[in-house]
Each structure stands twice: as structure tokens, then as C-alpha cells.
Image (cartoon, rainbow, N blue to C red; front, side, top):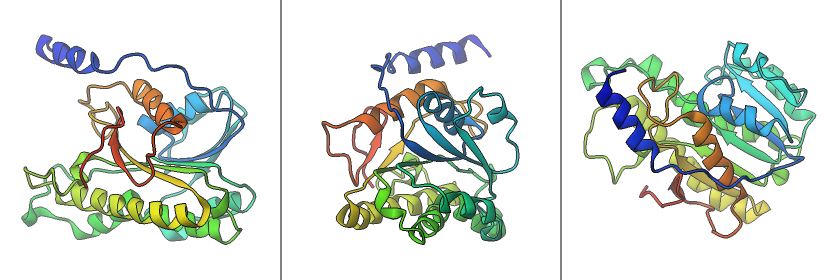
Length: 250
């Protein structure tokens, strides 16, 4: 990493000061995308005092490194609705308190109109947005929706229609805009029915497998997301926010 990159990263991280320690205890979390990036960081931090249903796609080697008996590892390709068998069985046995939906893919680096792979678009569409609805439908079959206290959807400002001034990235933008729409709808529907709180979060420029040149450490990002989960002062239901709880236009 060159000097310019190091300085850029350091300056970016100066915004993110140490967050006060928030203790969440004895909750049951469902975390998608739990085997890497933000999802892995959250699983690692929250498993100390909570039970975690950690959903991963194919490789759980990172999860195996976490020394905790509080993690239930569930393999599920969220893009394939025929692969939800194990997850269906696990959800039938548990009542989820909090869902953190971290699963996401960017797609090809070349998403110009001429290069869109529509099979890939549909697959990523399922992962980035529709899979959440599928999971909620599975929970509904066992009266599990009413137990959900919060849903945190990890989105991106790339899904903001108002902020889009660059174009391109069709696959990623479309799928994240869809997730934002689903979040807003759930914030009305589930809040009205069960007083659930649905919050959409743009985590910023986080270093993950999808964004290898990211500037913010996923563990620091996880601290801010936990702070958002613990927030009792602000009404965050139905809002699209950054890690500092500042609203982002849809």
C-alpha cells in the first residue's frame, strides 16, 4: 500500500472514533453473510453474549475460527430457493429477536448496459434483496414474525435514487434500491403489526472481500452497527442512515 493510500485510509478512519460499549445479551440473532466482512465481524462480537444463527454460502472456515458455542452455522445459497432446506429446519426451531442482513454481492466490475449478464443479475437480485423476504416468509409459517424486534439491512448509498449522479453499476444499484424499497415497506407493515423496527444502513467504505480497497475496518463498522441496534433515543424505524445515524435520501 502506497503512502497516499495509507494517508487516505488514516484520514477516513479519523471520523470513526471509539464507540461506547453496548452490551446486548441473551438475544437470538440471525445474521446473513456471516462468514466474511461485516457479517463475520458482527458474528464474532455478538456471539460472546448472544446466540447466533450464522448463515453462510459455501465456505465457513472463518466461522470455524471463532471459539464460541453460541453459533449455529447454517449453509444456504440465498440465490437458490431450493437450497433453503437446512435453514427452514433451523428457523422452525427458533424464535429470532434480531435479523442483521449482511449478505451481498456486487457483480461484475463492468456493468455497462452492453455487458449486463442477466442470469447474474437475477442471482444477485435474490441475494441482495429478495432473500430477506424469503426468510421472513419461512419465519411466518411458525408464527416467528411477531418475535422479531429489529431488522438491520446493510445496504449502500449506491441504492439511493436521489444521490445517483454517476450512473453505471446497474446490477448493484438495482438490487440495493430494491432492498431499500423492501426495508421501507417492512418498516410500515411489521411495525404496524408487531412493533418491529426496520433500519437500513449504509456502512460506508468498508474493507471486505467485495471491496478489498475499502478504508474502514469491518470490526469498527460492526461497533457502529451494534450502537445503532442499541439506540433507544432515536426513532430509526423506516429510515435509511449512515453509521452516524444521519439520514440518507432514498
